[in-house]
Image (cartoon, rainbow, N blue to C red; front, side, top):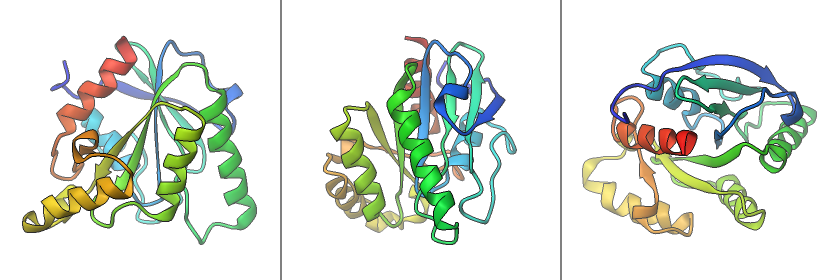
Length: 195
């Protein structure tokens, strides 16, 4: 099951959790702007344009919902930390994301994407602390691991995990571009949506 692309399709977008369609179980993807959320969702589905990919960070401005044919939904949340977005929009995004994470009853897991090349930023650490404080279940996914030279990967894994206050084995290490560990992440997603 986990080896096959996820059978998902776009359903709707919203600005607040209460506007979203009903779901039996839901997983969400959150991370810094330009961390590769849309690319990762596309890789999980093996579709190039399911989630909109842009060279301009901050393009995902709504809560985007995708249905999974096996049941449940996946959500792509707006990226945080993009400085060129006006302050009032950044504030609205913050309220949108926090409201969703606290109010969405079907939410069973949040996948927090951290750039594997640069490691956790202060905003990533802030998000992880907030999720822990609010007891929101989450898993850290390190993206773009293919961009780390193979001779540096062990050190990068240790440093990134320490920055997230986790063990390297607690993190899912992926590359959407190269397909590294995409099957493993698919299995986790399906497991949460169909349990």
